[in-house]
Image 1 (cartoon, rainbow, N blue to C red):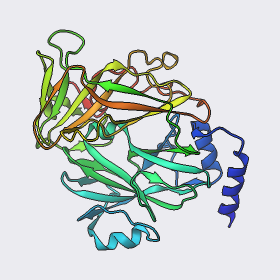
Image 2: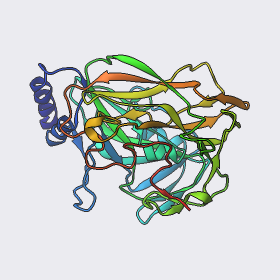
Image 3: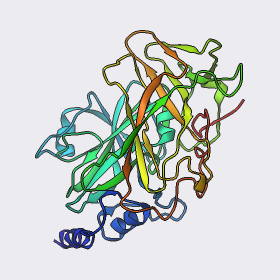
Length: 356
């Protein structure tokens, strides 16, 4: 009852405010009002609230599934998972999540959303660049990565490493959630094309993941030799053939700038083209690539997986699009203002890898 009253009060206090993606300061207010619970109280690992999103933390166990699922109306995740779980893994001291397997992990965070706010989840950038497929589900859920307005309950993350096995622990952050007040309002779209020439002749234009590489420790930042996991790629003719089921890191030809009062999500430009997938982690915070945050010239890094048949990419070919939408107000902190591995980026692997 107390939570419901707080939720109604929070909704009422925001009635006159603009619709759009909530900024960092409004997410902090949701936390204070009890609409978001379970955030870490560990001073060494404080909650991570980005300009327009909140990082989500893994809980203490992982359930190995024989099949992915959505619970559907009136069903809880805890009830449905009983029919598909194979065994349970304790993450307390760290555990390896294997490639080719699907895991369901309860998240530390729970929600008690106001009736005018929905939650929208995405993998974090580093997660996508490791080829780890994640998506969030909730009780009664009919869609992945979408938490309906007014939802009150736990959150779970489906985790499926595709290329590298990963070492995971409680508190690791593989995904993020943003919050939208009101209906989706697409402002404009910008096509994103592929760079297969690089900044100079003979430059590396991308990387292909090596099969049967070693383990990636999610907390091992710059702890893994890139050469042991990635093969550099060159495209002297401005073309690249994507092999089926191979994973690539490529960069956009264009610089990308997200205005400080907008956010953006990367979406397929042509879903009917089934030969490749061009992104996993598709959310861009306000200020990415912006002069105000020191991001001039930032490129979009694309996580590309070949499908079905070999496919020839050419330099400048459009592979995705950015869909911009408004923030409800400008965040009090911009992306990269306090430092980021991906601000002002060109072609770049995840922060887990070092050269050599």
